[in-house]
Length: 515
Image 1: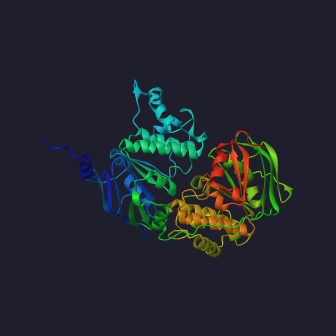
Image 2 (image 1 turned 135 degrees about the vertical axis):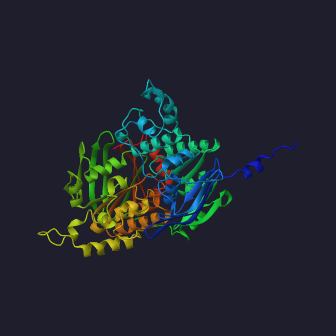
């Protein structure tokens, strides 16, 4: 009797998922132009491409959220029609989308169990029994909040972990993760990577969609590249390098941003002294200079977003003072801060920065209405000026939209981010705060945004950049303040701004000099 050959049997087994020749158009815009994708059981497969390349559209097709115009999808070698999300779930596919799905008024446990069958006792949902099942999975992914806590009170990172926990509870054969580490700290990301590797070892396929190429290189056995709605190539592990990936994504070499840091202190524009809002911001003191790019680094939850909300008037401080141009400054609300010359690009662009059903032009002009009003007596909009200004921003920032009247919710994440930034370019604030400006943005658009930030600073604008990515701040910033537990624990200048220094300062805050 001949012995079986496991390798031969494995190669004869059809892939779990094959998408072939998939096409999708929205109006006159062709989002997918015959793309293909193949995933095998237990494979960690990367899907990369610039914003607008078609990644999210393919995911929506696989999830049953939209229907392809042409092409086919096979599961275990058999053609299937994914007519709804329920069908996708029945086929063993689960999706964690880039924009979080949760119900703020519900508890952690209730959000984890959304859409899942629930244990009952005497016809009543037995939440205690369900909690016993969920508890080990929640702790495994790093959910530290009590299961009975309301998710509205949790951070973005914690809500990401809840979505991941929900996916694990579904016991899917394929989990699609769209930018899963965008709001996670380095430690939380490491936990996720271990979970992904464990899932892969147990036979679960992972489709990993990310602009963070270091994560793609670390995790993925193969990577599919899309560009402008087209399938470009599949790169297997031996051919995977950062340079090869970048060239496939953008169709060429991306210029690396570099600049000479000006070590001479410019005029102080904003001075912050012992600013406090417990428990997230404690005794923060720093100066911001004209023409400076000031980075704020640290782990998720360190108090960075809470600090910039105080600067912008979105929250009121418990203690401390600020001066702007040497005059006392205590913004009562964001409108007061905007009038004083502040602009803010928020961390959550969809929830806090955009009206998704409104047009690109409408969103661009939200902070600039006075500039397109014909007369203070008759508040009528000058539509010609509105169109001219909006088209210029769309052109200057290379926003991919069918027109300026396209609902901004139909744009890719990176193009939505450009719209939020473009809004402030119309107003030209003295101080521009960007909270995670390149989250979910492709490598080409990221370089464009970094170049724009440097140009704004060269023109005299003071720019504050909050980023969770230690690789983002070194080449971009003149100075970086590292926060931990609500305090500034280190200031890095010039050549001292390195990835290793940022990571070390983020974790090694014990014993550091505190303000």
